[in-house]
Image (cartoon, rainbow, N blue to C red):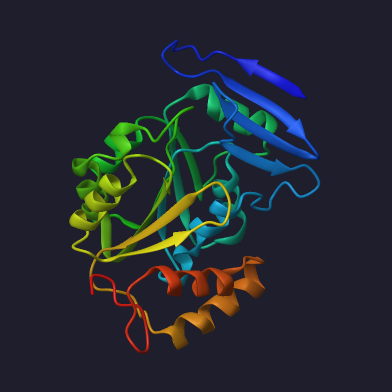
Length: 261
């Protein structure tokens, strides 16, 4: 059932469409692909698995002060961070004002306050302006067909690395089925000197990439397992299962992950 459809004021931007199916409200940008989802009975949970996987950056940086999110969608990740990470400040960047309006009108995105700032602006330009000012950066910028090219260039990934404080983590949502996936992954690897881990999502073919600015976090399995179980109890996210999956898809030493090894 389609509830809402509106062409953006900028005709170059895809129209924003809202639909509902089986108790889940969906956001689309000019096509059938689901950009965001919210279960109506549980509007503050993360309905899509890849969004929960992106939050696994908390395994590597448990107490970020300053977070940036590039690509708002329906605001699922922004809402979750605002509700659960009460000591963090989040800046969310979205280039399409109609997406911001839809997130507020249809997906319960809260108003800005001292911990949340939603800006209608170019995310790539914002990142380029940052200099070691972020503890965590999450990038999830797609149009109706593919990742936004400005958010997948070698220059952009280098800017992401420079935007992080020492010990910071950047999280990128990629599509494993994208013909350019290996190119994008390689650019991230080069920008972050091989310091990255992959977490494939079980559905939709999303692959979440975690990339680290030195120094590396504690990547011992024992320490990560403790953090994963604690975060699962606190946030209701399946971090222990994500950790097991990461062990299958990344270089490992006897006692922990060995990115770049």
